[in-house]
Length: 421
Image 1 (cartoon, one colour):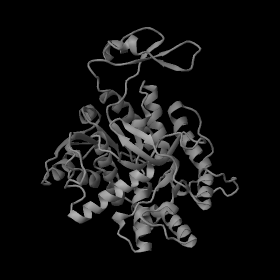
Image 2: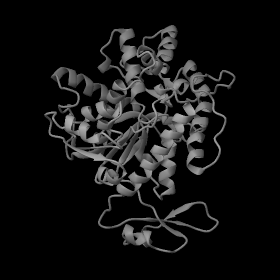
Image 3: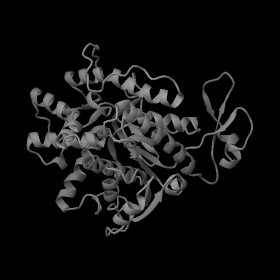
Image 4: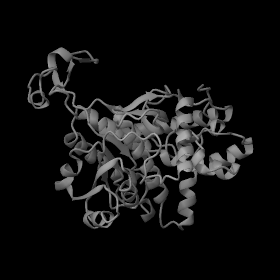
């Protein structure tokens, strides 16, 4: 299944080159345009939010772009609205207008963040500020993007006393609207309201922010973690670019799956499975792996510590958002690598790997690509770091003290490798 999906994606790239299609403002061969969607960008005036919004404005799959931030949104929206594409741009500023920014959106992209890391704040301060922002936005998304009701029906979850398993009662709740269920006083009844929106999390650190969003939704009664995506597409974009440069290929024809997480040693490019060819020596693989894992650092050093990667991140996030729109439209073989709630690797509950995207989010987990011994060793070393990052997000939501953090730039060589496939 994974091989077939990758082949379809590569064919679309070749068709785009053959017919000279612009990536965002023209239809790709095979696009299905049954619906056009409203997309919300939270943090639209930020360094990623602005170029992200500009590129989304060019997509024919988006009919309305809702831009939200705590300040400065009106100017950004006025600027982008002058681009000559059919997408309407709306501006929303401050908490009082957040509901309006979210209502009716099928895709919500969270780029909002607090103090920038280049301003000299510590990693912990940056995490706490971003975590608070992401949690507040998650509550707002749950309230403003409720489940699309089918024929006025919805479902509830019954939690029996002493029974940890949730039982779905279709017959009991089938005729009750959401408003009625919310007001019911019965101690064992609570509404299971799912989000109609697919949520892309771009705010860093993604390894912790995605668990924060999912756990916040669970506390609000939302039981659909498959609609929350950590946008790790930048890792794939970088891997494709670096491999193409090394092998002398067109980057648009290259696909390198990237698994694990989205920080330093947790970012694991599976270079042994690079398509259309993987004629890389072990020395090249190790050099490329290090370059992909430290790509953020390369940009920061090039900017002399005065900035972080923004334009390439916005490009990759745009491409991922368009994939979400294609998935919602029911286009087949929409495959991306993303950091999601997952059981692909038994040691962690969140993991980045190839997934098939459908109308309701994750349609299928495509599993781990076949990996070399070197890649298995990298993944084995990344697991403890991922576990710490995930716990960090869970502890933030549930009010427990955080664990001692393992540096994301340190490979735990004492951790015994295991074979994952």
